[in-house]
Amino acid sequence: MATYIENYHDWLRDAHAMEKQAESMLEKMAERLEHYPELRARLLQHLEETRHQQRLLEDVIERNGISHSTLKDAMSKLIAFGQAMGGMMTPDEVVKGAIAGYVFEHFEVACYTSLITAAEQAGDHAGAEVFRTILKEEQAMADWARDHLPQVTQQFLQRSAAPDTEAKK
Ligand code: MG
Ligand code: FE
Image (spheres, rainbow, N blue to C red):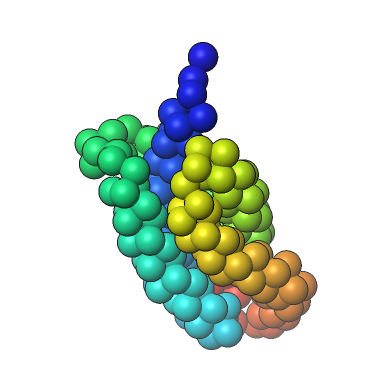
């Protein structure tokens, strides 16, 4: 068995690990992109939001008395997921990356939706408020990823079909 608090604290650590993963995925993708300026700009904006989310989470983690060493354990859980998503060198990497981003942002939306309930149930109402704020940013990014996937795909297809044009990034 696990108490409300124990489950909540586990998921808080998972959320922190998720944001570390998000940061490295966004960094990698933004720095590789050359021919998709709108996508790159949105990724860089969300990279800043993600770094701020990490700081917000660290405050909540500290207020809940969770030690920093146990944070590192949770990180390894998500590495496999990140490896599957990141480091794509395929010719269509921008499209694969846009799809991975779409999935990842919706994953974050689900995690914070669940974490809000866990925080409320554990009595951390201030924490729940923080997660609602973060959730709005994740939802906005998820919506953007959904709305722009057709456009990114179209741009890729167009560049791909043109002679002497690099399409993949
Ligand atoms: Mg995030
Ligand atoms: Fe996000």
